[in-house]
Length: 348
Image (cartoon, rainbow, N blue to C red; front, top):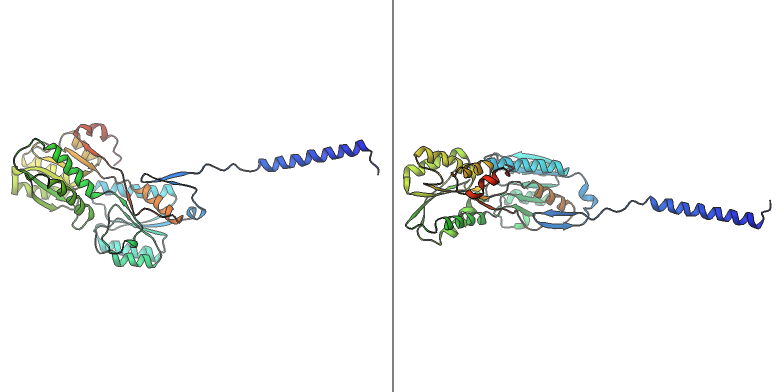
């Protein structure tokens, strides 16, 4: 078969059109790349795509120290909700204030070969042997809310939580300002949390740093009440029976103990917030309601909503990134003037 020049030119033109159409179809199938995500860990920006390895199934073993207060319940809920939202499998164990149970839980997590272990340690000391077991198993360990006292800091990756010493300083600074025009000896009592726990040790330390600025500030009594409302009331009652109206100030290491102390003060016949200045730590809704009524004078915030920070840290570890050794959560100080406005904003 023979083709004329015109026919040949027509065939070539058709082939060019088909070729261009094929190229156009191929390029239109390319999916545009999404923008590089920006994520945050406690105010620190982490920029870049999370590798595929970090999107695999992740199992986190978490040992919670107990359920002694509203703060702790909010902390637990935050961790459980954040794990669900992050798609992380959470193996949760509540030690109910027992270090022995926490150690058992951690050993169980090691046996189950979880990807990451996190603990909220009930006390500071006694962790080195079990933490060495986790390290030998190749499982990274994160501290949440409370610190530990170990000789080898490489046994844990990072500590996520509050600066308890600074919380104590904030309480002391409020008292300095509140009592700036007062003269004469000012008697102070202190309700501490769990013996040996980092919040009790460090809040007391920070508070005393500031108290040392005035010789007329006298700590009359200081006792443990285990962060509970019941024991806060019992210990405050004993303080009042011993020191009575010599007590001008109460520093409670958490809101639950402060709430119990309020009951004891009222039963004794004094007015909380007036006869006895009350400073507490946490920032629960109940404490804000008491502050709005004038029964608590100042609350130093300690944020329990650590779940999102913890889950993000877990993802960063699995992705092979290096975490800062200390991740401090932002917190504020609240006084009576702010209480009513802020009470509705409390999430716990």
